[in-house]
Image 1 (cartoon, rainbow, N blue to C red):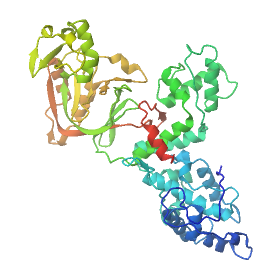
Image 2: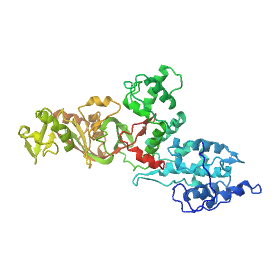
Image 3: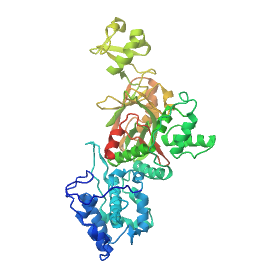
Image 4: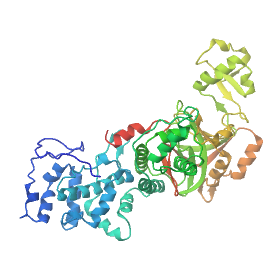
Length: 530
């Protein structure tokens, strides 16, 4: 539905929508719109004058884009035919009624007065189509400045030319294609549009509790939640309820069953509206990303996933474990320079203070049992000679864990320099990979099947066909068999991008992940102009 606003005709000095207008709104005489002695085409030309467009709330770029669009159209109507919606106008309404289906908040468009003259509606509808396309193409949020970008538009003449494709493509798909051709982006954009057609964008939030906390009304409340979100019809059977839970969990990227755990409750308590806004934000991040090299590793923290690409082809996918909310894994980009087999672990001071020191105070044998050694000024110190109870924090020793099966880094580490001192590594705690929600580390990224990842990296490690790494995938097995610390340098460093996208997609499906570090909220407020 078009939002209702009151158009005030006597405004002299106010800028519209915070979009940086450089024109002063002047008193506008609208009487010509009701003058039967003036042709509709002449009325359109008067509405297309810049003073009038400024009065309607168009910024300078929107004015230029709309004027050029109608110039390319022979200054004829496009949205209406003699005061009634044209066939193209009906397509436009379908797109403009729910701009969030394209990842564009409604607040970024020109508001429509439902009682306004149809010629005004004509140009506003066209402007909003151009604005949706422009925002999709150029971005909504300035992530460096943490501010919203001015609403930009498509080139009016160029968009008019593109409309000739409507014999072979829908208007909605034409708008979607204004975004980048990046595969990840297109998967999300296409699935978002389909999701918004299938499910209502409900704004209600819930306060669902676990079955243990809410034994009486648990199933009733789950049903009500899934009904409002469009996953379940009213008066459905228990089997329908179980199917709805499975469908909902699939959209969360969780194990597809009818069990409801804490992560599922968290996802259910969030409104669909907020999920769609997070999707719009993820799309905006993707459209403004730097172009990745043909060979790279990409980690998306909210999806707990590592992806290795070579020659723009996905070669390997791995589950990962990331930092707890109190030890969040940072977003960064770096370059992997080596694969370390049987790594040493230099324990960070924070972990030494909070976890190892209390354990040693309780039992000094804890160090030898877990293959830790302590050093002071690079000289090894016998643990039994240290008065451990003297220290509470920042004790003056460096703790090193020797390579081996008990090492917290496991048997493989991917090494890359970064100021956060985090890396990708193996872990002895394999059982955690079976969980859907994997936030358990101190900040590093624990990788499932890291040996296979290391082998695949070596498969593609070359500068040229004749300049390949002397170490090949079989070398990994040989080095690991020796069970000693060994570093394999890479011929060509591999870029690694650690990102935070709370929505992702495959070719088949869209996934809404939990915003576990609460990093989206600030940008969503900027995106919608709050």
